[in-house]
Length: 130
Image 1 (tube, rainbow, N blue to C red):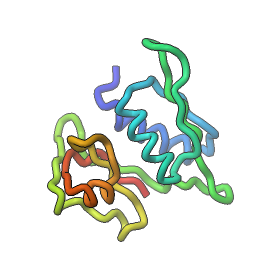
Image 2 (image 1 turned 90 degrees about the vertical axis):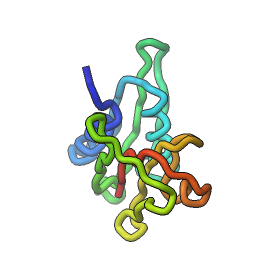
Image 3 (image 1 turned 30 degrees about the horizontal axis):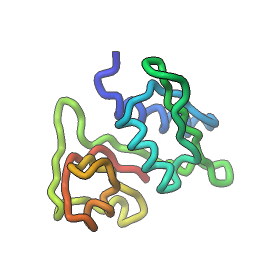
């Protein structure tokens, strides 16, 4: 049993990218789908889809490469089950000077750090991607 499903998803994306895999399959959850949809929208993965039916549904993530190099350079889990990290709207970090994104879970849903700044909300800092 996995205690940190988001952290596990990020680790699998990173490891599969380094191994030059085409896609990965993960157990489905709505939170994983929200994070993966942001990664797709921001161009870090090429496709995200739910396959199968509940309770055995899976999340299929197709990884993206640019001239053979993975688009995802690194992913860092910030808020963990043992130590949650909450930030206000003024403390949202710029990842690598704007070259990466931060993903937050806010009262308005899961969104990128730039979206949260525009909407004026803070929340739990899930991860940083570049």
